[in-house]
Length: 155
Image (cartoon, rainbow, N blue to C red):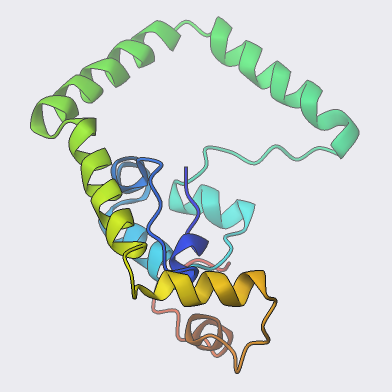
């Protein structure tokens, strides 16, 4: 769904995140997540609305816990109601702005990202050649000294 690190490579991404992410976390948090491109802990993801829950289990127990949760959701009485509600929301959203428009906008942005002279070429070259950074990227420096802004969850 989301890889804000595309931004660090001078790329935009095209997984319909411009549609899905604002629906999950709101426009302001979407802008913040994409601008800062920092990792988000599982607990912070739940607090933001990016994730529904944290499955606290040892690795050997994880698959079984997830299966049990999925079976519980599938067997729940309100499941069909939730599916119907989601379908109605998607239909309203499609009428307001089709997914095709999100895709076209994301792809247009990506075409600009890879045009001759775009920063993505130098960033990709530096990545592939394992070039040393000349300093701490501003978004990491600012996060380290607490310039994240009021009300932002711990990451």
